[in-house]
Image 1 (tube, rainbow, N blue to C red):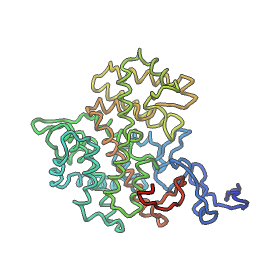
Image 2 (cartoon, rainbow, N blue to C red):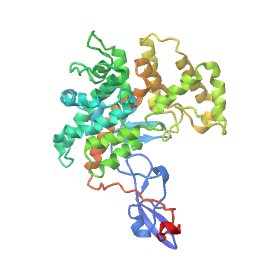
Image 3 (cartoon, rainbow, N blue to C red):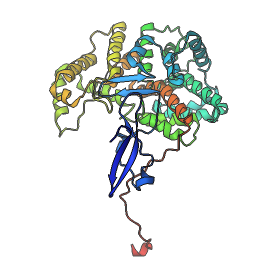
Image 4 (cartoon, rainbow, N blue to C red):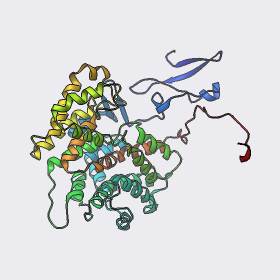
Length: 429
C-alpha cells in the first residue's frame, strides 16, 4: 500500500484502489469499483470492516473509549449541555448561540402535541401490548397525519419533519406508557423543559398536582444525551437503508424503532437489569462469574463488553455517576441490585479474565438500574432509548438525503444455494 492507493492481487492481475482518510480514525479503502474492475465482491458479515457511508456527525474510537458528537466529547456534552442543545448540534453541526437555542427550543416545544385523533389510534392496541409494538405502529402512522412534511426533496419539509419527530416522540412514548398501565393521557406542558415535560407526562395524573424533581429531570436529560447518537449502529443503518429508497422520514424512524427493539441492541439494558435481579445478592456473584467464564455454559454477563468499545465505555462513567445521584435523591441507600452491580464492576476491572477479554461495563449496565429507580417498568426501557435516539436517526437520515452521492442501499451476497435446475412435475419428484 502506498500513501494513496491499495493494491489487490487477484487472479493474476493487480488492481489499485484509492485510500481515503477521515478527519480521525482508520483509513478506508474505497472499493466502490471493485466489482466493475474484478468481477468479485467482498464478504463481510455484519459489515464490521465496511464503511457504509461518509458522515460528519459522530466518531467512535472503541480502543481508546472515545465518543465525539461533531468533535465534542460525550462527557462534556452530558455534564454541561442539555438534550435540545445536543439535538441542535447533531442536526446543524455546531453548538447554538443563545438566540439560536431559544428559537430551537421554542420550535420543538410548540410541536409537542400530537393530532387529537391519535389518542383514539391507541385504543386499537390490546391493553397488554408491549410499548415498543405500540411505538412502531404509532410512529409509522405519523405520515398519515402530517402530509405537509413527507416530501423529502423539500429542505423545509425535511426540517419540519425533524422538529416534529424530536418534539412528538416524548409525547408518544408517554402515551404508550400511560396506555400500558391504564392511566389517562397527560398533555405536554410548554413551561417545562424537554426532560421534565416527559417525566410529567409519564407520572402526573389529572387528580393531583405533580412536581418534577429537578435531580431526576437532570438524570433523565443525561440519559437522553448519552443515547442521542452512536454512529452507524444497527438501527441507524436501518434508518439510512430505509431512507435510501426515498421513504418518508416517519416510516424510516419506525423502521429504526423496529430494529432497536431487538435484545442485542436496544433491549440490552433490560437484559442487564434482569441479570442483576437473577443474581440477587453479592454472595452469589462468584457462582455467576464462574458460569460466565465456563465455555460450556450458555450464561452471559449482560452489560459487559461492547461491539465497538474495547475499552471502558465513556458513557458508562457518566451513567454510573447519574445512578448514584438518583438513588441518593430518592433515599435508596441499600439497594441489593446496586450492590451487585458495584461488585460486578469491581471484579470486571480487576479480574484478569475480564481485562484480557476487555469486558468492561457498558452504559446498559447502569441505565437499567437508573430507569428502574425513576419508576419505569422494564418494558419501557427500549422506548426511552428510541425517544433519545430519534435525533441521531433524523440527523443521519438528513445527512444521507443531502448527500449527492447517496444511492439506494443494495448489499450483495455470497450465494451458496442450488445451481440452476429444471422444474419437475410433482409426480416425478
